[in-house]
Length: 292
Length: 312
Image 1 (cartoon, chains in turn blue, purple):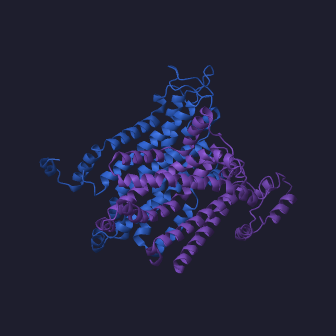
Image 2 (tube, one colour; image 1 turned 180 degrees about the horizontal axis):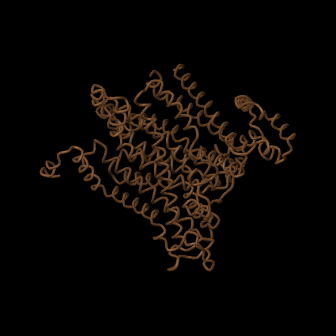
Image 3 (cartoon, chains in turn red, orange; image 1 turned 120 degrees about the horizontal axis):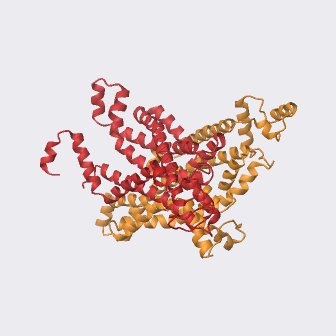
């Protein structure tokens, strides 16, 4: 950045934004990750316009058909267009990834803030409760929820969100612990700020970058989690398309049509990889030790 | 040391008690009258009352809970829909699952730790890039898909390995043949996590003062890396094992489902699909207890490796 445009940006916040953007654009992998992520989001949102066929449209003259100009990726055992189902399937994945992460954040961030800010017995109680939550791995949680509430995308998302919360609680708590020691906290106290003001106006904004990075890690985990749950029959239910249910269907035709097991898996890998690469890039650019 | 262990054991006990309450309440939250289910849909009021009395369903929840825990502590988790004892079913399934879990841990340690060390020592060189990219892929490829691909390649196309099933350990070779794919599939994710953690903690150790001192003393590079840097990185790995346990449990369930292995994980899914509540309750309780106990074990090992933890 030249001296001239640095001077023209007086607000430190604006200057930081420009710096972060420059750093981001210098990382081709991170940019590629963002592009692929946006691609999947567009795919999910505009599925009705992008998909050549409806998700449930069957073509009984083309069962398990090889890829052709009519069906670019071929068809499944019911003659449904594989490409269309992949595009529609992005919806379940993106929904689960996004909402599970939002849910986890809504639960974890306030709890982590309180634990890290007040410490003492509050922190101990929260730590024990987090341990209890951790004793139920997400799949076991999903199993329990499916047993109580029935299997659906919503319940799978709930399980994924609750399952992701303990790790986020720990991150938010640790971050609050450190931020509490910053000079602006005593300064705010001297100004007569309440605990609430300090937590939400001073500490929370300072951990947004950490939370953003955490989100880019949680989303792909939830996307894979949704696929797993749907694959096991604990998530999206047929005939709604999801990459997980598509793989479940493909399992019966591994020798006749292995490609049916390949494409949905590739979609999951690309989506997860894109978020992970984007997350790695964000972690780098927010890292104060980064110089480039 | 004793005080530290006692505190950890106390915390584990609290976690276990709260977790068991959650399991108990969770099963009670399932819609439907358990008495009707237990009475094989017989709706005769006299029969239902007798069942309620027999299973203490007419008593307050705390009494029911205490009774359930009392029986569980004596190894009685009730009977499933087929009137088979749940505890017995679980005990017969656990060795199979333990075998998969241990073999997959072996795979991930054999791959992840050397890869992480090499990547750290050769930082910024091709070896580092290959290992780092490999770990990223390993993290992003879901096990269950990898499992399907393995079946397509090694079982359907090449006929090298059996696609599914389990053979008891009494036939070691056949047993291993059936275990190779599940162990690798389950191991890749953790290998990737291990590699990344090992790389970053090795980089930290390699930059530490004591490593510079060791180099200044003229120690060989092998001794610096192996004896000084590596040892300290092992502490991080132990913690990671505890943290990854949940993922391992989830992974086992998936792996067993794909490879058609009738282990504990498969039992979990079957229990839900059959809506067998006694079984679900038992399986979830055993999972939570196993998780807490293994974590306690990890804490103990951790304190043995790192003396600073014991006193703090």
